View 1 (cartoon, rainbow, N blue to C red):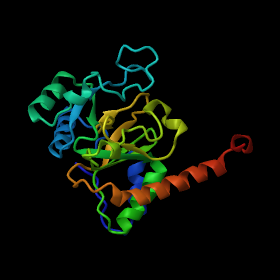
View 2 (cartoon, helix red, strand yellow):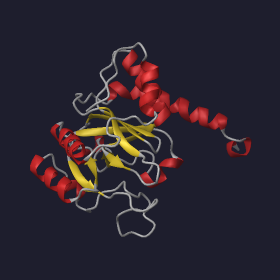
View 3 (cartoon, rainbow, N blue to C red):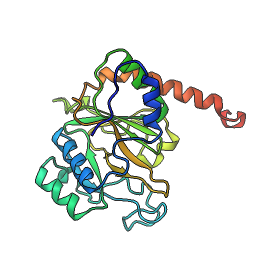
View 4 (cartoon, one colour):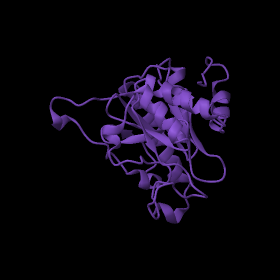
Amino acid sequence: MSAEFGGLSGLRGKLTQWLRGSGPTEGADDGDREALLLAAAGAGLPLAPAAYPAAGYRCSCDRVGCPTPARHPVSFAWQTQSTTDRAQIERWARHQPQANFITATGMTHDVLDVPLEAGRQALERLLGSGIEVGPVAGSDDGRMLFFTLTRGTPEDEDEWWPCELDCHPETMDEHPGLRWHCRGSYVLVPPARLPGDDGQSVHWLRGPEHPLPDPLSLLEALTDACARHVTEQDHAAPGWQRL
């Protein structure tokens, strides 16, 4: 159910292979889909149904020009609807066989969402340093998702921030750095299909059987990798774009 990093030897090669799209959920049948969703719920990730790709790059929702096709919940009540209840998730999965699912963050877990290349570099560094890394998902639209314990809601609400750190999902391309999904946010949970005709998906690189780590144990490696990624993008951009 989960791709696993087998020691330090060959680490870069294995990462490269997985990031080319050989995630374990690729081509998953309905039984695999349901099992993966139940595994995520069993790990404490609350789930709710989400939209799915329609023809071409369209979304299954009725919204004209949907800004996040196949990437959003189907209900406005997704925060209260999200659940880890096995029976409810089985009903959803069987009655909505095409639906993607989101997991609501800030309840039991947060997600550190970074550009794919930055995530690859950080993952190599973290695993090479022997730091415990929890579940990690790869998204073929160029992002990597690190699942962590939540910061929770401190007694002093002034110490808590909502998930508005650098962008909204529809402006992600304009903000290539780290986004911390906490209370009030969500991400697609594998297995999920993305729009297009090339079979893009969100899939596990490390499955939900891995314990959720403290987000602060990953933060330095991820922010450093994101800073390098943004710098490399700036250097690669044409001169007129750097003005």
